[in-house]
Amino acid sequence: MRKVYLQPHDIFYAERMAHLISAPEVREPLGLTVNETSIAAMLDFIREMQLEEMMGNHYSRMIMNEDFELIGVITLHNIDELHRSSHISTWIAKDYWGLGYNTLAKEKILLHAFTEMKLDVVFAGARVENFRSRKAQRKLPYMTMNAQIQYPEELQVLERREQAFCILNAVKSQDFLNWYDEKLLYKLNLSMKEFGLPVAWFSENQQWVAYNKA
Image 1 (cartoon, rainbow, N blue to C red):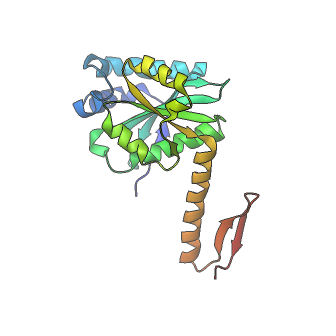
Image 2: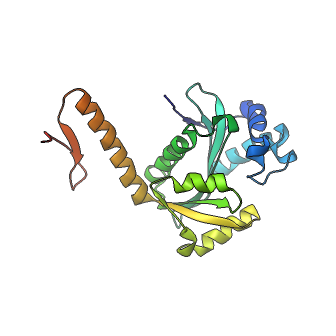
Image 3: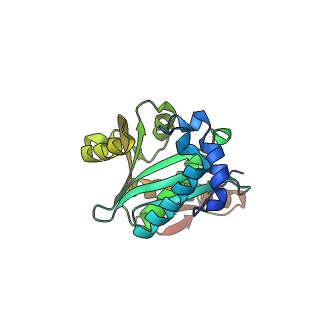
């Protein structure tokens, strides 16, 4: 069963991080040079993320799989407490593509963003030429596509950071939390049916209720 754990950055993993991100399939869509994916660069990145988190600007985590191997990084950038927003970015090592780790990592960090950090919206963008990232975002049921129409200034922020033309999508708190509640309910119903118990549902006041489904 696929699992992910989001762990604080540690310089112990700098060498493996450099190895994973330096693969051309990962590095090039991110717009990084060979020097920017070296061990020294990863050490600088880790220290920068640790400092930025202390300052409240970023929240970045290593993505570990079920065997507790480092397989990628996920980050909330430019945390804006006034507007209760942030930007998200993720990369997964090539050997772990298509296995669901990206989706699981996003689920965990977005749950933290909306329940612990109390953000209202998290922007998800990608370079125009990064078709893999764009395709992955379209698959997420809680994602609002073409968010640049509502948030043109956030697209400008993203393009300045990336120094490239980008697309902008967004995850809104209520959309994600509604989806998350439905996911929990679905899992609960499967478990209850397995043991012959009444099926659960959400009442209007968001309390768990059980009933015998006809």
